[in-house]
Length: 398
Image (cartoon, rainbow, N blue to C red; front, side, top):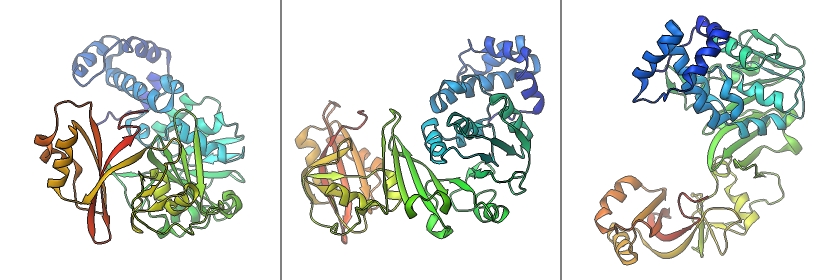
């Protein structure tokens, strides 16, 4: 279980004695294997706050990878860091608010406030019920006004309301629409200015039936969040948007009103390439729009796999080498024939479990892992079809 910080811990860490202790602890390994030794060493210069110091060093190292060097000197909790958006995602969201004054009513340790501040939003206000996280936010963002308040009890006027309701309950991630507080409760608390809401990317937003735009945001091929934008921020009447971001600063978007439409994208036979659209496109229900934009079509009307004569630039795709009704024996023959030592398995719409199939194919595989292939298994109509492919770029590349 992660260390539970107290207000006394935050007061110590934020003061000169804590700063000295953190500087000394920065030289410790702070790994699972060295934790007991690290705590023993830290007690020599941090006394009763040794655990808080060691945990802060551990969290700062993790935070830099997610939030950048700005977080190298922050105070954090494990849960707050887990829920925080990666910095490129937080900045993307902050930039969409068009320099409006914002009140973050669930500010936690201040990660989203930091992105809003960097984007030039003014005035800014943060509030939270947790006194420990609020004290950490005050340390992380000196000068940004903060107040202890319930997200459902308005303490500001005119500012755009932003909320990132809790995704966890009793240590377990929430997968339904029942966030804490709920979307309905937040909307009811601010009837004159519906909040901008950050929610889990897999949420059933159709079930919420909330006016405005749903934006699914991905980073480096992984869906990160669903943002519910009220009508005031739904540019041009857009109702669904997929925003595909990369850590190198590149990105693109597709919406349900971008002029592509989905006419002429009926499912059809396999072509030279299989394209697996970015998760943001899939979860925003924009697969057919994406297909129309790039001259592709679906393999099956119920699947997100697309096919065409050429993949979109910069997209990982799979050149089709062989096709057959799915049978494990056929796949094993392909593996032996091509001397494959590294096998990527992707599937949609079938009961195949990739890891289990890969274990059963191990005897057929070569010991030379430099030869790689990708097996795509898809339910086409009522039967599973196997596509033997070469990935471009290969798994792990880029």
